[in-house]
Structures are given as structure tokens and as C-alpha cells.
Length: 215
Image 1 (cartoon, rainbow, N blue to C red):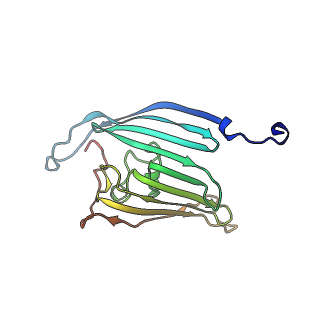
Image 2: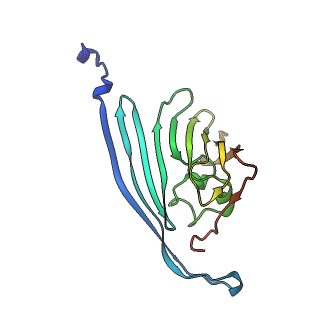
Image 3: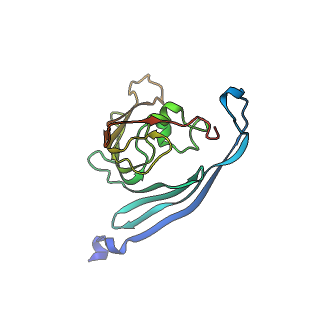
């Protein structure tokens, strides 16, 4: 009967697929600056070294996973540790849980290998939170040409840039829209990001480092 009606067997459909890898980024820097700005050293240094494993496993339901450890500036920290499901129901395409990127700022959610310059701009470094612990929901509407992502995150670990307050809770959202007019360009991206912060202390601080890591 099972062969005739192709009855699923979730406990027999267990599988693990993944890979392990590493990434090394090296910066070479030469400064031309007046003495009044301080001592800038020309140098070659490791910008970031990352070790990761990613893939998916299936135990009835497919689950994507990604874990990444990063070494930057002599500090070792957990970069990413997330699990992701793809329900494709009720307008929700993806559900992500763990230590991940809040959906705020286009450069912030892209890989550092995909941004136009070596560093993100200072305003984005200051305002957009770095990796946080929480849950993120994402979806899209083909009819309305709209993609959205929203999440609820805690302060997580100490970070070198971004919001430096001890945030108890931080809901964050992003919406992207593309015109459906017949004469509209074939590729237009309009996005809006917003966040609301519940802080566990009276002071809230936003900060960013120079747009050159060696500086």
C-alpha cells in the first residue's frame, strides 16, 4: 500500500548535505596624510579570516544551516549561527532563527565581497546593527513587486560598529518595491529600512570606525 500511494516516510528521509570552507581577506594600505592627523602606518594586514560550514539537513522538513567564525583585528568571535526554513505559506517565504544579519541597509545584508568599496560608509556603519541574535521573517509578492523582511533581535554580543547601546529588544524591518508601470525601467530598486529600539539603559550610542580598517 505504501508503494502504491507513495506514502511519505519522514523518519526515513533523513539526509545531511554541507561543506566546510575558509576565507581570507588581506588589505594593503598606503597613507598620504599631514602630520596633524597623527601617525598613519603603511601596512599589509589580514582584514578578516573566516571559517564556515553551511548546507542543509532533512528530517521530515528541510532545514538550511550556516555557522561561521571570524577573526578580525586579533579578535575571535561568532559571525553567524543560523537555521532557516522555507514554509512558503501565508506570504512568508523564509524563517531564519539564530545569530544573523538584521534586514537594515543594503550593504549591511550583502557579503563584504559584494559591496562597492572596501568598507561600508560611515553613516551605515553607525546606524545599521551588525549581527544580532533573533528571528527574521521574509517574503515577497510577485503581483505587487514587493519584497519585505522583518525581525526581532536582542543586543547579542559586543560589536565594533553600529548601535552600541544595550538593546533589550529591537524590531527591524525592510521593504523593497519596484514599479509595475508598462514603461518603467526593467530594473529599479527602491527600499526602506526602519528600526525601533527598546534600550535597557538611559543612554543610546551610535558609532562607526574610519572607512579604512587600517586607520
